[in-house]
Image (tube, rainbow, N blue to C red; front, side, top):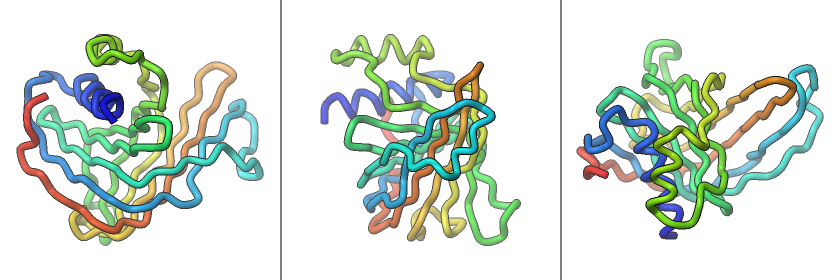
Length: 180
């Protein structure tokens, strides 16, 4: 648990222009279903591939003071994050959408909190140039019953595709999330 909290804090540092700024956060309990990671080449049709399953029961959504939006799923092996610049409430009249441009895959950034913070502040563990969306079934996160994140990243001859669907059980909003 200590490592997961350090990873969440590290992602917060990586995405914040000024790490000491506060944010608004939503802490969500639920259950992921039909969620996976698929790997291939840019020309592969991954729709027929099964993929590696992803499980989760918790997610945090943060609106950082620097404008970035951060969605982090606590999986069985670590924290998987998606990030973008806005909460889009105009593209779809009934949904809140976060256009994703970064993925923070689950990876080993060390075991000590200081090492995790240092390595993540240097940009390790971030896939820039991602394409995708995180979508909530309503415009208000506090009222959401479902959410989905779908994103891909291509570099060279490698492509990764993430899809996470979550049935939401409970949402807790925390305004002015404490400084990290």
